[in-house]
Length: 76
Image 1 (cartoon, helix red, strand yellow):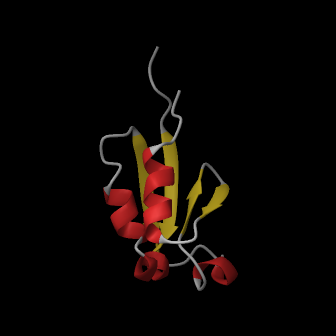
Image 2 (image 1 turned 90 degrees about the vertical axis):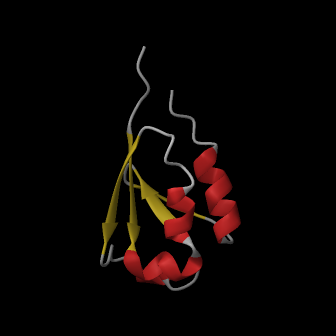
C-alpha cells in the first residue's frame, strides 16, 4: 500500500515565523508543497506560524512546535 501524499501550502509572509524551515524539516515525507504570496488568512498569518494541509489550517505557537507537528504527520 502506498503512502498518501498531502498538499501543504504556506504564505511567504509567514516565513518570518520559521514556516519555511519547518517545511524543510520534512523533506523525507511524501508531501506536495506550495508557497504563495498570500493565502488570504492574514489574521492568522500576522500572529503565528501556520500551514494549510489539504484545505485545513494548522497553527502552532512557534516554529519548533510547527516543525514537530509536521514531522509527526500521519500519512497512512
